[in-house]
Every structure is written in structure tokens, then in C-alpha cells.
Image (cartoon, rainbow, N blue to C red; front, side):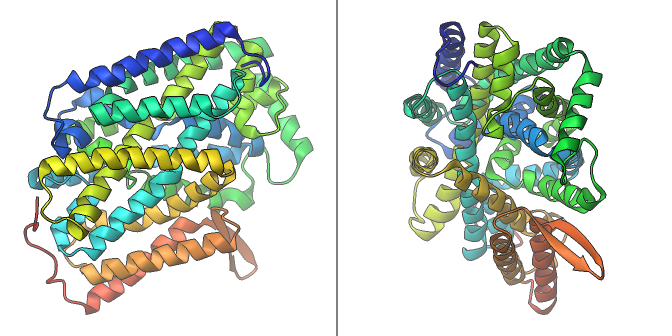
Length: 497
């Protein structure tokens, strides 16, 4: 990817060719696994008919995004070992998915729940708690979609194209085929996306070290770089970083499948058995993520120096690979933005329609009206994320995404705990959610929107992920209030399906 001022025609031709391919696939997907797309469960959950292979690609496609491919190597390039917290986080998350998500899927399938907030409404009734769950999901998702645009923006700039027009064009195309095909579009495109990413990463981790003198040379260069840089950076984790590293990994793992897009991917599976199989096989993506992270060290060894760490991967590929592969890699990363962005907008639209619009504005809406509303809202969500990137500095999206992780973690008790105990009250869960949101937001604001806060215990200082602190406050309030409030408000059967 050869700089911002010269367009490589070969790389651009390859990029456009693959982008055109997924565009065609996006529109063709409407006729794949045919269903009545005027029904929300067909448009927004793919008719709940995706088997093990499709679900594996779909969950992986929206869990490992363009921003992952750009941001993880950038973090490793900037701070070293600390950037690898994403690895234990993904190792923790799959046993959680195996244990929890099949149970949630069974209830959602039996009661025709389309969203996590549907499940909460089915268990507790009322409007306020499900609306809080839905609103949290929507707000936490918006900056996440914006960050997919950041990833696409970086690779387009790496191809030598400046300005916002290519980005706008790409997301107009995304909006159109998501509107037309619903969840089937990203499910079909995920096949192409994941295969391309695997090819790019395997080629990179095999060929780049060979060109640089081997992995020993790569790690030695990274070690010298961070030693000279000083501070908390290094290829070995500092003792002062242990609690921050561990708490970020744990908090991120607990939050990961609370997001609307990952929840949507799980609920679109054809059976609880499919969800379990995916939890077994999805760790293959953890291996991929570890290899992606190593690109940060390779960039250091290759002498890559950039003004923004996000430009590291495009700059590395541009220096060491031929033009055709640069275009292929750029297309793979850009498509890695389209898949999760589509699922995120669908998940947010499902939440808005089922848990805000229907109960609070139009209780008598028809099933076809639900689907029509969700399609329209999915356009609004994508357009909002696009405005976010075009008119506001990227840093706002990054900061809000960090806050989004803190916020989405606060829906954990309402969704997960209620699968295993009937002792929690609706009022207790709502007050716990509110305390968690306020605590997390206040701590993050006090820390300048950094994800960790230093806890002082005696003479020792322990940096801890803010989301976990807020979740702990949430849990305490939930259980204390539930002990003193009647749990009779928990519905025996859901009040709506």
C-alpha cells in the first residue's frame, strides 16, 4: 500500500474486483436459503437456519473485524506485550459460549425471542428493563460500527485514495444489500472474507519473517525498540501491568457476546448443538488473532515508522509485498469491515424495533411492519456511523467504543444470571444496571476515557479494567435489592413471543 499520494493501479484493480464480488454476493444472498424477508426473524436472524459451517464463519466474521486486523497489530506495535491481552480474552470467551449460549438459544427459539432484550422481557415483563437492555446495546454498537469504517478508511488511504467518497460509496452499497438481504448477506460474504483473511495472515507470517531474517530477528528488533523506548512497553509484560492485562482479558470476554451483533449471530444458529460445536471450533480464530498481533513486531523489525499506529499493517504490506497482493490484502481487510458492520446494524435495528418502537410507540405493529421498521433503522444506524467518522475525529469513536465495552458489560446479570437463578427481581436488575452504567461512565470520564483505573490498597497499586469494577457494583446492588424485593414480578411465561 504505497502511500497516500500515488495510486497503484494493479492494487486498486484487485481491490475493486474483490469488492465487486462481495457486492454481488450480498444481493444474491436474498435468494439463498429462501425465506419471507417481510418477517423479522427471517430478515434479522436468517430464519434461524444456519448450520455449523455457516455459523462458524458468521460468528467469526463479526467477532474478528477489520478494526481487529488494524488495531491489534497497532497496539502491539505501540506497547508490546500488553497488546496481546486479546489472546487470553478470546481463550476465555469460548468456554463461556459453550456453557451459556446454548441455554439462551433454546429459550429464545422456544419463545420466538429475536433479541436479548426480548428474552429479558419474556422473563420479567415490563418495559423499562428490556428498554434499558436494548438502549445499552444500540448505544454500545454505534461507535463499534464507526470503527469498522476506520479500518476501511485506513486501507483505502493505504491504496493512495484520499477523501471520503470511496468510504461513502462502500457503505451505501453495504446499506443497500443489507436492506435487501438481511442477515443472509453477511453470512454469505463471511465465507469469502474469512478465507481471504486466512490467506493474507498465513502468507504474511510465513513470508515477512523470511524477508527480515527470521523470527529471532523480529523479536530481537522489537526488544531493542521497546528497551530504547522505555516506560511500560516491552515484549515481556511488566509486573505493574498484570492486573490490568488480566482484568481487561476477563472483562472483554464477559462483554463480547453481550453485544447485539454476536448475540444475533448466535441466535441465528439452527440448534443449540450448532452453538456448542461452534464454541469448540471457534478457537481456530484465536490462533489467527495471535498471528495477526505478531504483525506489530514485524513492522518494527521492518523499520516501519508511521504517524498513526493504525497505518502499520498497510505500510508493512506496501513495503514487502507485490502490488497484486497489496490489493488482495486491502480487499480482505475492507470486507472484514463490511461483515460485522452489517450484522451490527441488523442487531441494533432488531433491538430498536422489538424493544423500543413496538412496546413504547406502536404496540399493535404487524410482523411485516416490524421487519419494515428494522430495515429502515438499519439504514439509519449505518448512516449515523458514517456521519460519525466523516464529521468527528476518529479518536471520539475509539473513546466511545471503550465506553461501549464498559456499558455492554452491565447487561450481563440481566441476561446470564437469570438463566440460572429465579431469585433476582426486575427492580434489582434495573437498579444494578443503572449503578453499573453510572459508575463505569464516571470512572472512565475521570480517567480521560482510559479503560483502566488504579486501585490503591495499602502501599500497592493495582490497575483494573473499569468495566469489571462497574459490573461488581452492578452485581452487589442487584443481589442486595433482590433480597429485599419480591421476585413475583418474574414472569412464568413470556408475555409476548
